[in-house]
Image (cartoon, rainbow, N blue to C red; front, side, top):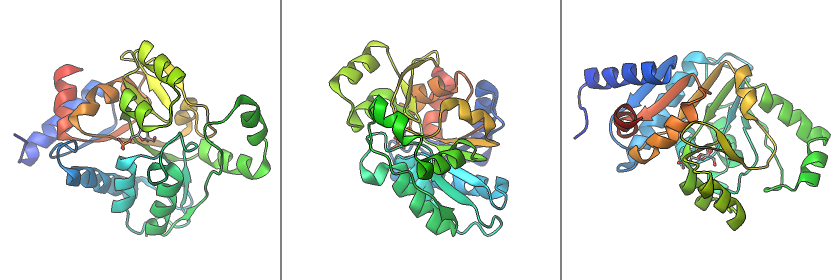
Length: 255
Ligand code: F6P
């Protein structure tokens, strides 16, 4: 049974804020694992937060996934912030086209009436290609924007779900299982202690770049993601969480 009154949601928000030591938490009613429109509500909440915190000419780096696609779906013109620039946070990460940051970034920018730049890199990348590609001037320019973005908006996923959804090799899948990864964000896999146990090699944002962003907004919900969200927040990478009641209740209970 889900909360129907605003006070209940506000209590959950405050509890999560204290527990995960965040500046801002939004909990939308329902569980996105059960109802699709809940994801759309998280998207709307994210757009609303963005509108209140974005200034003209700023760069917004975004990741892929169905939750970020819902953010793009909910985007409306960012009239208060001209010339804002959308960029994908990292390479494709093995996701199918509709779940890739590039695709979502272009859609989001169009709906926001902003600009966008994309990352064209093969994925996954060998070590030699990686070294050559990051020296390519056109790539370098976009990477620079990404790594210095003022705002980062990203999803979080369950480690095994993500490893299976991507074209993860059997060898890497074995590592992910063996090291007991539970959460994933930006191509980094975390265990319950929040330690990085595996990382997908691709260009783009590195976890340490998050320090430079003014706002790092995590958008993730559904009760099945509670453990993944908890693992990602162990080292405290973000300052804003937009989630749903399904994940919030589970997070308060278990983690
Ligand atoms: O692959 C991009 C990504 O943002 C991952 O980092 C994250 O784990 C996943 O997508 C979330 O996907 P979804 O919103 O579909 O659960």
